[in-house]
Amino acid sequence: MGAFSQKVILQINERQELVSYRKTSLDSVLANPDATFPPDTVNTCFVFNLNDKTSNYYVEGKFLSVLPIETFFNETGELVVKILQEGLDYGLLLNTDDQHPTAYWFWFEEDKTTVKKMTRFQFIKPG
Image (cartoon, rainbow, N blue to C red; front, side, top):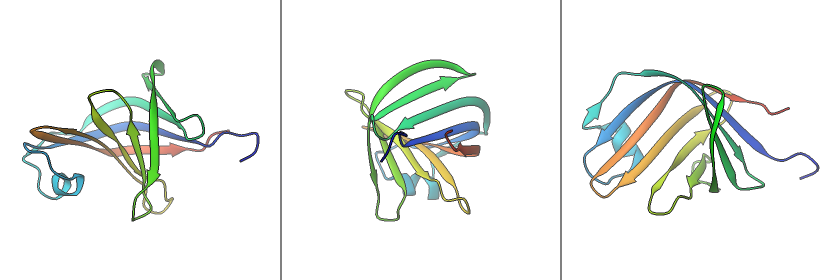
């Protein structure tokens, strides 16, 4: 891998929350949500260090937290980032392809599945 760490930097400027009031799949929530909220403007950033297996989280440019992560590529080649926080099941699904980038934050609970679809965002090349 060399002297440089492998990082994925996601800068989010707008996101839209979609909710299903049952535990279901991310695709199911996107296709048929029970509730859709208006997009909200944000200034948040995730820095995923794939070597150190950490996620740094920033809001308005201020560092808020660092959490351990687990990463893998799903069957369609998207990067799945699971945030490892005891008792919680959430993370992000990222497609960093320049032609069709997508970013979704997801949270699975016993009786609810929440997805935040990033509607204005960019992947920033480290360096």
